[in-house]
Amino acid sequence: MDEAGTPIEEVIASIEEAKKKDLTYDHILSSMCTDPHPIAVHAHVRFIESNLGDSGLFPGTKEIEGRVIEMLASLLNYPSGTEPAAYLTTGGTESNIQAVRVARNLKNTDKPNIVIPASAHFSFDKIGDILRVELRKADVDNDLKVDIASVESLIDENTVGLVGIAGTTEFGQIDPIKELSDVALREGIYLHVDAAFGGFVIPFIEEKYDWNFKVEGVSSITIDPHKMGMSTIPSGGLFFRRQEDMDELSIDTPYLSTKQQYSLTGTRSGGAAAGTYAVLKHLGMRGMREVVQECIRLTRILVEEAASFGIYPVINPVMNVVALEVPDIDAVVVGLMRRGWRVSISRVPRALRLVIMPHISEETLRLFIDDFRDTIKG
Image 1: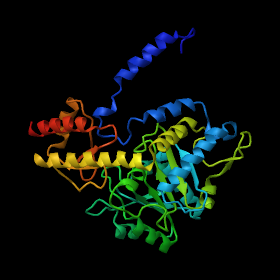
Image 2 (image 1 turned 90 degrees about the vertical axis):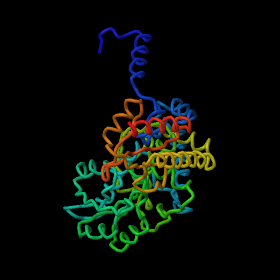
Image 3 (image 1 turned 90 degrees about the horizontal axis):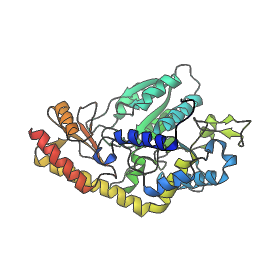
Image 4 (image 1 turned 135 degrees about the vertical axis):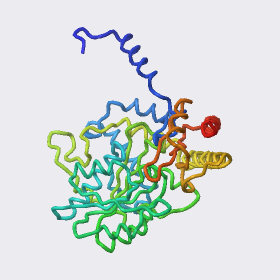
């Protein structure tokens, strides 16, 4: 840091130079984040100094968080007539940490383990290390959903919880949450659903799934507005079926304006809460449905066009995530990068992973398809 400081104009110039090095989302098909809606940006900036971690100083911001929780609760089929046990997080990783922390604390064992799908997000590997919980990874079936028999084989007296994914990161698949619920209820253990991505997709697609609090055995759910909800980063949500479970996270905060905190982070962004509120309030269910259905429409175009030059999906997409079987996949990824596109590769099976987020227009998608076709032929 300079002794004398730097004139504002020079600071702004250096910021702009750094920003030029960032990629713009329009050529990114590997990310589950997207350009935030303009109204979310406006609201975020308006509340940028607000700290939900000391919410007694920012009662208006706390009210905004409450409104967001109510809207998200409706997507998650939260039990009616019950005040949601929930708070806004920094995203899926924090939400998943906290859910597993609750599951661990609820069961008295010196050697806790959780059973997760092999397809689970890598945040669970962090969780195992942070919380000292053994991860037991269940196999997935031919549809890349968690295999229930494999889950059951991994459960023992030290199992504190099960995890199901509603919208897997690599393939967009929805685990059989109802069947996981049956196992959890029978065994008397906690069930967490990671719907960080799918929580803003599944309610708006044609096919119906059992995945949220409508399923009796679901204990908690992760949902991320900064993904398909088009809010600003960082914006996540964590919901518990029972207030008693959330109370496992409570700590006293004697020198703040509030008596307790549930969150993992102490300081929490009021800006992200306001951004989430603004975009959801503006779009409503109809607007969100239109956004999701457009992403699904473009996903179908991608699959159909890829088939025209001999490239097919590993599985038929459930949502706006596509995994394509591609020969010489590493060379194809490099070829696409040289043409300005950013894509990714799934782990098992290895496939070209593409996510059709709201920032992808039909015009952009068709430019990608043309380059993809040329890269394959090349």
